[in-house]
Image 1: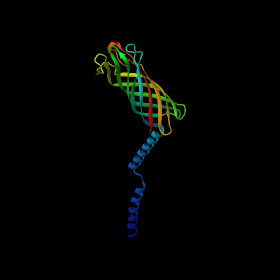
Image 2: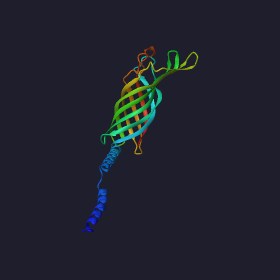
Image 3: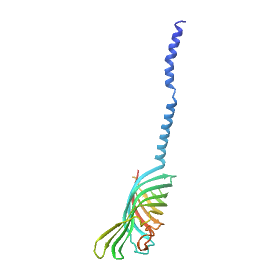
Image 4: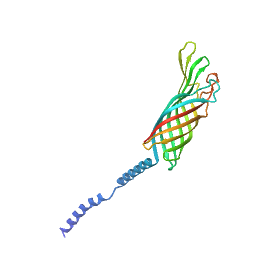
Length: 226
């Protein structure tokens, strides 16, 4: 009996650590739950969201202008986008773009080669309808925040190029709607055609000679979806 009791005590002490190692602690369970939640979030993003970059050309002018008979001027746009897939045929896309816009004319008042340069940080929010897996139609609103504004012209008298930089006389905010079509290649590259129509007076009421006009931009873009 004297031998049996110490033997039982020694056996219980050796078994308890082994049993404790087999039971998950609360800390281990919480870590596993966090890991599972991260895995689910990553899988959700991979299945339902896409990201990419885009760049292209702008052919910009002003609509309803009555002062200097504006022609289109060429500029650039570039930025990135995120897309959410609601279903196989419907998605939504948000873009953040730097867009160089404005207008030009061969002759205005006593100047020639006159141009207005308006550079925006543009945020289009568009819905996409997928006609096929590659072809998509897009439509939605945009808001543009003016980054810089300048006028450039050549003086007919002196033949000298003059550049005036002044943001105070142009509207800070532009709003409008965009519509277009895109084609996505299996490699992830794509091509897009888009028309932007502004609703606000891009030049503002304080612009010289009462010039006014809303932005109109035709865009040709290339993009890559990751």
